[in-house]
Image (cartoon, rainbow, N blue to C red):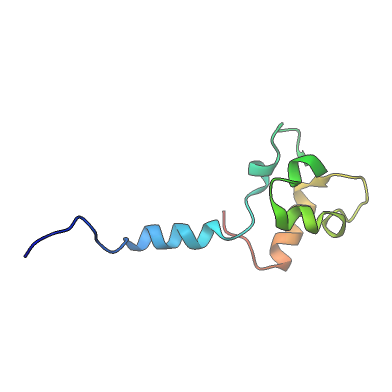
Length: 80
């Protein structure tokens, strides 16, 4: 049988693609590593940017790790 170099992706690849569809982990958005996500840092992820004000429950203009974790959990979006 002739092979054309294509084969179905392995299960781990499929799982990685599914995980990539969720919101990124906190550290991926906290570009400067100060423990807070600013509006500018959030702008790289459209879902976080659009919901920034709702996620910022203490209204300090940044997202801390607890606020972000609560938002992800409320969306059942805890892939890391």
